[in-house]
Amino acid sequence: MDIIIAANWKMHKTALEAVEFCRAIRSQEADFAGVEVLVCPPFTALSAVKAALEGSTIKLGAQNMHWEAQGAQTGEISASMLLEFGVEYVIIGHSERRHLMGEDDIQVRRKIEAALQNDLKPILCVGETETEREQGNTEKVITNQLSGALQTQDSQKLGSLVVAYEPVWAIGTGKAASAEDADAAAKLIRSYLRDKLGAKIADGLRVQYGGSVKAENIGSFIGLPSVQGALVGGASLEVDSFSALIQAARKAVAD
Image 1 (cartoon, rainbow, N blue to C red):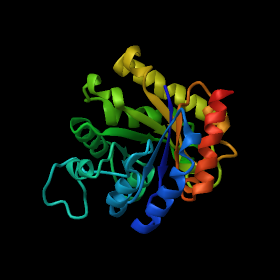
Image 2: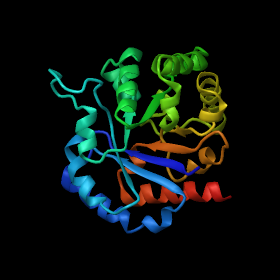
Image 3: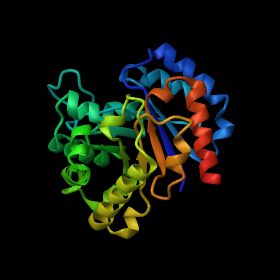
Image 4: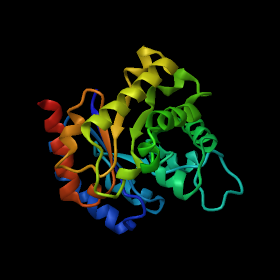
């Protein structure tokens, strides 16, 4: 299977800036063979990015969605609204949504369910805080987050799921997890998925690493058999750094 590298731009880039980025990254697209690349811009740039990526192999993702189809949900966005802009993937349960916006496992589960019902591919984020890690609770936290998001889902609909391990203490800090930490977490995720979904489905799913990942260290994660991609924050904001990361990931797979 192709590895999947996703750019999470968070609250960065106007529509004009996003278009400029997409036009520039497309000029290097030939160097991304064997890598599924997607960008997740702010909602305000989805329409512009859709147009800028027309005819490209680079895919469009969203950073969040609400589980309701419509209603009195001020400031939210629904699955149908995302689909209108050609969105294929949606990030769900990112640590910044959980810890800054107060999202809990019930909300994450509802979002996963709504995404699957609308044929959106969810990127489910899981990961522990620094305190949880120091207390030796990494395994417990990840298992609980996976269970909270997936326990009531129809396993037959989860074939498009991507799980991103993002240790909270590594996001935006410049301090990435070690390859050993990432490997242990990815294996734990895979083990849970096999128990939940069965080996046939679980072994076809991809696990990403995210958290201060960049071109200089992506190889240590992608080189692990347990990791099939990356969810990229800061390094995805500039064309040169994102392109270098994709090409380094591609090289790591080839080696």
